[in-house]
Image 1 (cartoon, chains in turn cyan, blue):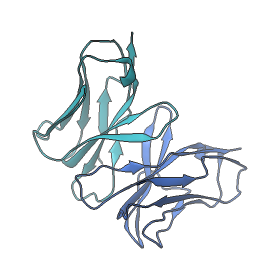
Image 2 (image 1 turned 120 degrees about the vertical axis):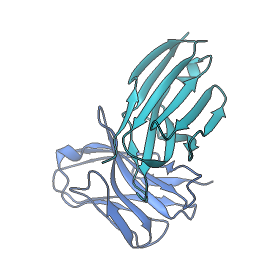
Image 3 (image 1 turned 120 degrees about the horizontal axis):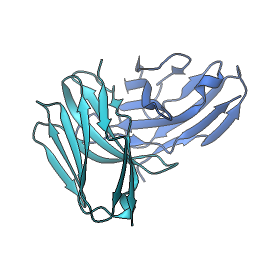
Image 4 (image 1 turned 90 degrees about the vertical axis):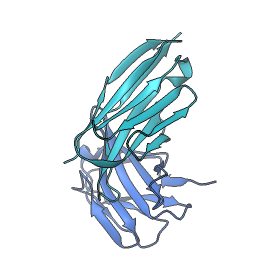
Length: 112
Length: 113
């Protein structure tokens, strides 16, 4: 059974600081997704990572994937208040078709 | 506009009264899924479908049914809702190309009393 664990679950940081959210998954996976969710809203796709060593960047967010370590990271650079949201990683195992397992989510608060 | 449309957005119902939450996508996606989101438990997959007439159970399928008679529609049916099915439900779809992530609907907040 695929398990996905994120840490930290809660993160409070100051504007301008850097931080990393970690996502560990338990079995071999062929894809890793990062999503953002604002309170009361739906999920917005941020990144799709498909291969070992994949790195993608969008604005102040950068995601990477290490399939050997079964680890993905979401790095936040010079945080701003608008990044406050809950971030989820999700993984699908090999030949799992449409099955997707989500982490518990990291609630990020960026304080002025 | 490419989107996944769920209806209704909010629903309050009574225990045992059958209900259907509709989901429709206009992107010609093969894959569709239903999730429920509960505080402290994150998102859990209920059912998924890889194409028309092809569905399979996710992690928490008990108490739910689905059907995929047309590619664009994937309704979620609660034959006899119970209070423990009170939750926020999301429908999502994606193409067969893994390069793209799932597109999520706006969500349906269901309360069963």
